Image 1 (cartoon, rainbow, N blue to C red):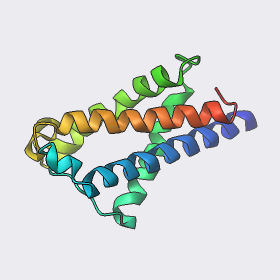
Image 2: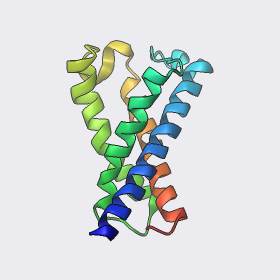
Image 3: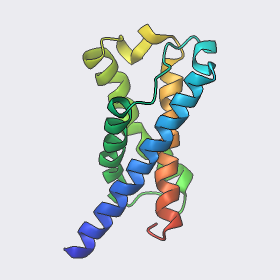
Length: 136
């Protein structure tokens, strides 16, 4: 049981780190006006209120890394597991919680692309963290 909780905390940490990198990437895209150039109205400020839940949710989504799929490829593993938070963001959070339309299209037609790419950044970062510390 101790080994399981050790693994769970490591996986949570990897997911949280992925959430931090995902958040910094989104902030940078907004700061550099790349999202605006894409016609996407997302340019967050880094504040604790914005950043903290993203890191925690990244850690919670990290639990997907308990599933033993594609252990040989951090890229495939990260991209596959990023589909979970991507689908929730596009089909639940944007339309139902944030009232930004299905797929977040009220924020711009390229919003789904931004979400897919940045969530892949989360997944690949978490997978690389796990591989780097010898957990994969």
